[in-house]
Length: 374
Image: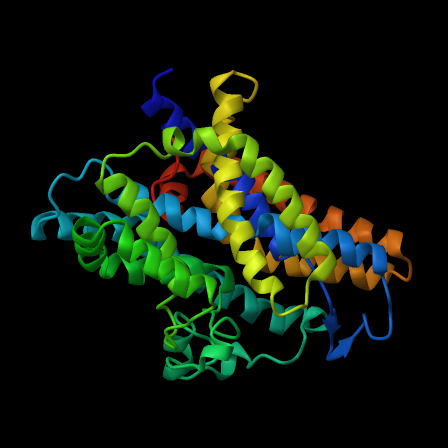
């Protein structure tokens, strides 16, 4: 296996585990509002709190930054000269691979909200505006920020700034970075690692552009991937020597985060943990792939975008359905729901993807941005 093959296989292998991480991020419930009532009020689940904090707030938080990193690397992969023609070719391709799915999945969520509000009002929080009352402004904002803001205060930059299909904020921010890709190319080509370092400091300090869609996280990690790609570096080869030290450091950081989460200084530890975690995940995956201990499951890898785009609203409904039926009052019950609901959601998604891929392959290819293998 050549280093280039190993790099390609590492990217392909990581897609599904990272998507599972994204689902777990969205699986932690501190409240469960049904018909305007929070069923979690005055209940304490200490074991669930610790486990969910580890598997939703710490370990999987590397997923989104790593996706930005991979996107930046692949966007400039083997690009020797970023001309105007290259730029527009890239935009044309990304319109098919991310813009079309972005529009489709937001429209689908609008439809699902309408059906839920009409036929299943008992599972709705009651806080959202009814789809049947939407005006033109509401429809347009649903594709950018459901709370109808373009400019937000830095302190609120990560709160309430999502499209109606909320997990697609990643795609929205990625599209913004891609529009500014000539600037990214010039920066990492001319200023090299210095521009990446500056963006990294801004990200680590929690700085915000204050504009919805202009994410420091997106620009930083996309630029890291772009830097390695533009300068012809194989990121698996670059990171491979750091496997032992990243393993030790990440374990220590995860424990510190778990024990001291909530402390102001711990936000910086969290950022450092993400950086080290990315190195660990890449080096660990490439190590076991190279030694043929781990193997790529093509079906799971191909299904990753579908699971990502599909999972959020079904996950909420699965949680609310089981929560309403069980109404957990012990740590064990809460923990069981935390583990069971995302697993059910992913399995349903894989089954739906299998059916769509088998019976409607062209449609499935369109809604996943062409990510369906023949």
